[in-house]
Image 1 (cartoon, rainbow, N blue to C red):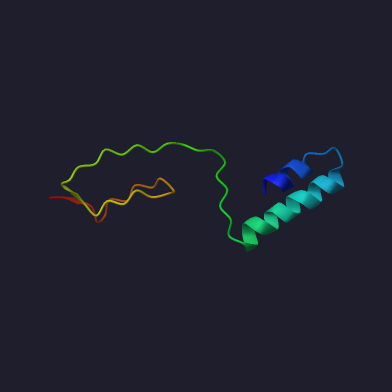
Image 2 (cartoon, rainbow, N blue to C red; image 1 turned 60 degrees about the vertical axis):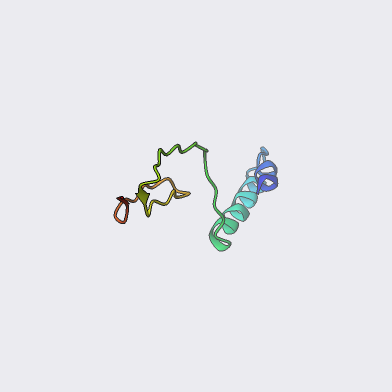
Length: 68
């Protein structure tokens, strides 16, 4: 994907469009994940915490979480 992005950075609009269309096909057809930026998730946890799962998408779901 990085190669296609680099190849798409050209003044020729047709070449750029073709490269970006190929990138789009990869994202949709191959279910690729592209994160536009990276963050660091910091969680405070305890041995008493039950059923907590740190997720890749940073959603914090607490419906099944409990403290023992």
